[in-house]
Amino acid sequence: MTIYRLQTGAALVPIALLAMPFVEFSAFYWVAARIGLFPALFALVATSFAGAWLLRRLGGSALARLMAAFRRGEPPEGAARESFMVALGGVLMILPGFVTDVIGFVLILPALIRHLGERPQVPTRPAGPPPGGRADPNGKVIDLGEGEWRQVGEPPR
Figure (cartoon, rainbow, N blue to C red):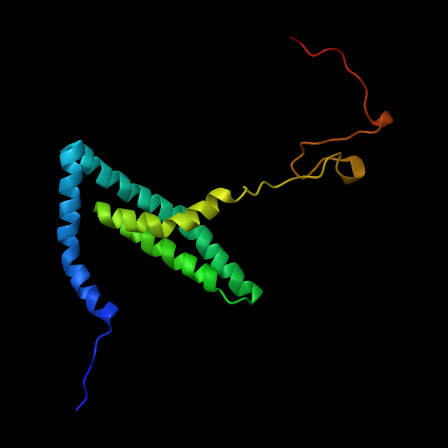
């Protein structure tokens, strides 16, 4: 005869899933009592849109870090954890409810701090004329030598 024992954490998951609608309704009622029904509804919709935007914005960079770790041949523990946390946090923020929004935002916060701390990558061109003194591929820069140009009268005004 085999006896199965559930771990304490595994037993709490179904209980938490059953209790979550009641917790969310209580939180909504509390917020709506403080700020009003329509502002509370607006806040629910706004946090859902914010979660979708954060998931799209941070999910791409987290996935790029994960793929870069794979390309370098490094174990992707940190990148995989960050990707999972961003995905789970974004989904929790999209779901309606203030409690899931707070949990989702806490999960996304480390990736958001990392994203805000990064400097934007701006392509740069070396200073000075292009090599050979001719136009670049876009035709924007032309560097002429002494005998290659002549001055024409003033342009019409």
